[in-house]
Length: 171
Image 1 (spheres, rainbow, N blue to C red):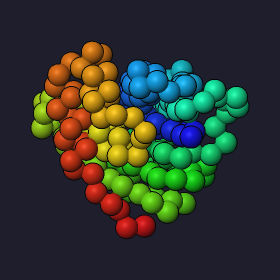
Image 2 (tube, rainbow, N blue to C red):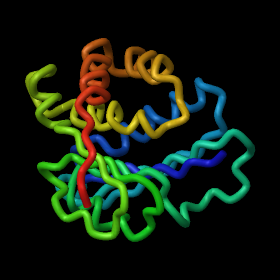
Image 3 (cartoon, rainbow, N blue to C red):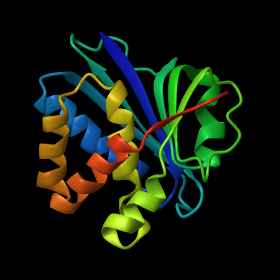
């Protein structure tokens, strides 16, 4: 089993942090993991992304030729990576409206969830992880433990709300 995940957004949305948390949770669950990130020197509102390969065996070819799961928090991020998508897209539907090139898409009101729980959009990425967790080979308890250890208990609540509020988008 090998799952290639791309987390895409713009600077300041936490795409890089989300990738690190996902990689950490996968390692804790006993998987082989490769984590990379991509961002511009002008970070705010420019495309940024992280990539995580999760495998149950040694990762021999650490290049993302295709994406199994695209977590897109902004249209710029989606636009940069959708052409490699062969699996599922999980998007923030307020910020990703053009879903060209995708067969299966799910949405989650991640920003809204973050504002409800945290009082700001700071944990939008955590709500996205909650929704995307339905498509990951990781134990939910391991993801929650990783969030608790790195970001605190409130982020676990945001994660759970993201898991609950995921919905299928007709494409």
